[in-house]
Length: 135
Image (tube, rainbow, N blue to C red; front, side, top):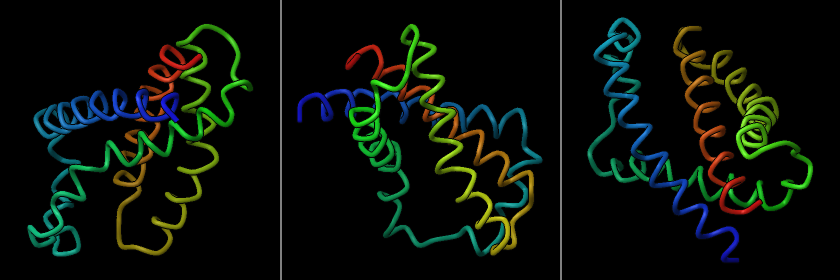
């Protein structure tokens, strides 16, 4: 269990920092991407804000379990293993989720593409952490 929990916590902290740092930079340098978020669909009451901030930890725990289960399939150094892990996750989970999101909600293709890239980056970063901490 420690082989899953400790790397998940480390990855969660790193993802939290990288995600919110990346969000800040994206808003500063790509503001046109965020104009569409001024929409009631994306407005929630503050009662659920903690769920938004906990996302980095939720995804890191899920990915840590996935890593522990399938890590023997990924070959190469820790960077290549992390990259392959992220690509596999993107293909297996992100593509179907982004497909159904785009087909069922009133969101733009650029929004869905940015979410896909965001998820892929999260998975690669987490994969590198897991490959280093739990080879």
